[in-house]
Image: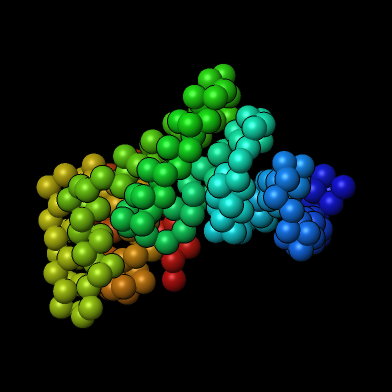
Length: 222
C-alpha cells in the first residue's frame, strides 16, 4: 500500500523489517529463499523511486546472487539494477572510468534480461539510452580537455586547458555543442570563474545551435 501511494521510505522500512526477519530465521529452504528475494526486489523498487541508486543496485545484486527460478522476478531485478547503474552515471563526471564500467554492466544486465524476455520494450528502450550515453564517454578532444581541466591542480594548468578549448572551438564551432553536452559550461565557471570562462563561451556562442540549446543555462549563471 505504501508503494502505490508513493510513500517509499515507509515501504522501505516495511521491507527491511521483513528481510531482517528472514535473516533471523536463518532458513535455507526454497520458500524462505523466495521470500527474501521478493522482499529485496520490492525494496530495490522503492529505493530506485526514492533515488537511492547505490542501495538499489546492492539489493538487486544480493537478490540475483540467490537461486531464482522465477524468470519474472529475475527480469525485474536485472532491469532495476541496470536502471540504477545508469542513473548513477548521471551524477558527477559523466566520462569517468567508473561510469564507463557502470554503463557496461548496465548493458550486460539488459542483454541478459532480453535473452529471457526478448519482447520487453522497457528494457529495449533502456538499452538504447545506455548505448547512447556510452558513446558520449568515448574520448574526443573536447572530453579529454574537460577531463584534464577537472584534474588540474593549479591555475596555470586550468588556464592551459582553457586555451586548448578555445583553440578547438575556434577551429570547429560544432564542438561547442559537445562542450555543453558534457556539462562543460558549469565546469568552466566553477573552475575558472566568469572572466576566464567568458572567452571560451563567447566563442561557443558563435554557433547558433549552442545559443538555442544552452542560452538558458548561460543566463542563469552569476
